[in-house]
Amino acid sequence: PPPSEQKLLKRDMLRLRKLTKHADEARKARVKRRAEEAQAAHMRTAGVGLASKPASSTPVPGSTLGYLEESDRSRWAEARLAELLENVEVDLGQGACVAITSCLMGESSVSASVTRK
Image (cartoon, rainbow, N blue to C red):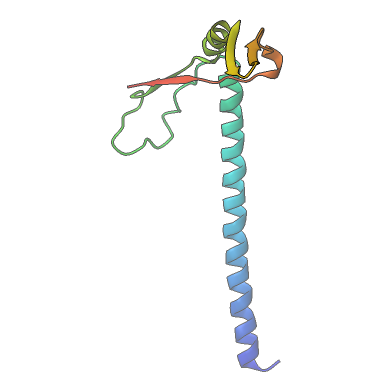
């Protein structure tokens, strides 16, 4: 190939390497963030409070470490909801009626958390 074409090919090759490197870094960051989110979701469903982020992480501007405290209330909400819904009857008129006799806890999902300053 002529020198001008070689120069264009080399420039394209460098551009593609740069794009590939950036895409790989972005993919790794997404995978890491998804893993952290999955771990946090698992901890919330298990009823464990979330630990504060390590000191090495960058805090959000305007906040201080330990400023917000999150606590999981899913188990309480699940029990309270079952309590409130049990034996509820609603008359829909024209002879139609809906009655809740029990909550299927294994097939239900309730999540609640409280964030305090």
